[in-house]
Length: 533
Image (cartoon, rainbow, N blue to C red):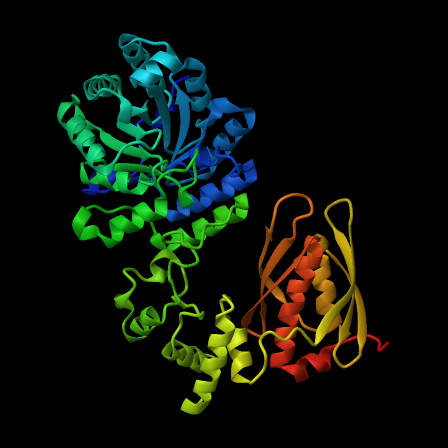
């Protein structure tokens, strides 16, 4: 199968006219997706691929077509859907893999086949059973075959960082002569250090014949926690493609995190002297979409996209941020798609941050009142809680943020039905003695019980976040539900725990409803429905 003649001279991108640009090769949907816990179906992979194109990745590795019929179909669907991003398919240096990749990429506007073959002594002996000569012959033959099926061919020397430099240069020289336009030297097992990878890339650029005609690429794993550092070191040594993934997902400890590599190159542009095509404002939305599609949360302390990346609780830091954001932030949250910096109110927060947050909520206590609020605030925060706006508002109004009323759950029944729908009924008691019962239908049991609580209390909630975490192991472990919802143009938060996750969600919803009721009791009382027992 030959490539479409009409595509012969179509450039994959305009990179060649922009000096010192680092191409971002995203492998979230291949190396990342094949890691345990991150599998995605075809629909999810297409959604992610479209977001990655919006992000501006140069090359998107969509999958390994020979691995399964579903992977083949996903690559083919993505190939036909993207307009500007080069779609890449992985293949071993085997005829069947190459032909499968070619068929999957047939409709791609810009296509690349990514060939890989082990080159290290360990892999040659124990994985391939090949001599150096056989490795060379296999690589050349595969590149020549793939070259007729796509716009570009990339060749990866698997386990390159544990390959003899002289042999690696020999293999890469043969790859260039055979028609490869990108040479990837991956740290397959996350073993190398920044200093070592700099030495290797400098060596390769000096000793590979035709080095000036190709792009050198870095693909680093994070087994020793140095994937991003090693990738940046490779760039400093002349690599002009970095292979990485959103949120750093991938085999074992993962790959270099795309958002970290890109922002390091952006923030430290004078140091690295290179640029990328990434729209950094799409970094956070891309990260959030991936967590939504895989169900795998990002750690709070994750660089760039974690919940704490632009959050400050320390009183010293908050005071500095209130004076000038540059004191403790080297980039703006808006640069990565986050709305604003968050001054988290907790036990380390100071009086100045508390006053500023209260003013933002519309409260301007005098010094004496602020002293009282601050004392109660510290007492509450010392329990280890992170305090939200509704807690601060309760303190400002003289209420107890720990209060549990006025609504209490008496009964809860939920049933799931074929087709995904569910029904739920709740019975609630109000502190004034009323008992209210309501039922509702929803997309699932959690949705149904939340709708029933809305109807019973007369408090509409627009759910923005729902998360369940296990508080132990085994079937009897408690589930901890965390909800965020919009009401009256504000975000409210609640949490609840139970061995029944539907009950945990109901308790979390009641926390939100009760906070709203305590803040605006007249409104909640006016709209409450039901019969008095």
